[in-house]
Length: 165
Image (tube, rainbow, N blue to C red):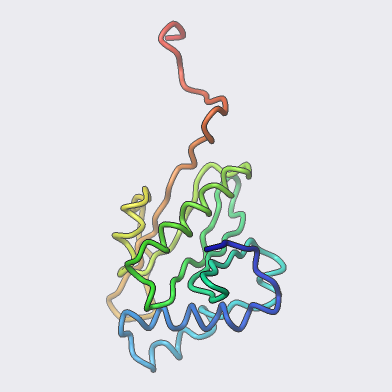
């Protein structure tokens, strides 16, 4: 198992993973087609953002992508796992790698507009719901979720010590 920075030439494979993973939730061909643009990762997107793929035996089983948001906010745009690998811990592997990488930035929070089916996954890894976003599907809302980024072990933090109160 290896996590690597995506290359421009990975764009089609990454997009295919996103579409297959989204379709895991049985949205139907018509809805997936409607989301095709949102699920497409282009070579330009890879150039401009942080995109990482999870490889197992030379097979791409998942990926994630993030970018700086407003101020100290990191925006998680994508985190998808191939359907046959969902539920095997690969999402947690991707999330752990993401958290390690964002700790190297000046970001203080990660935000994601989650698929409602993925809300429990994000809660289990430490995200909290802070709002909702109207979906393109009637009467459906996406949970807007955030996670505070903790300093890496050994880094200075700004918490008060007993004698500082």
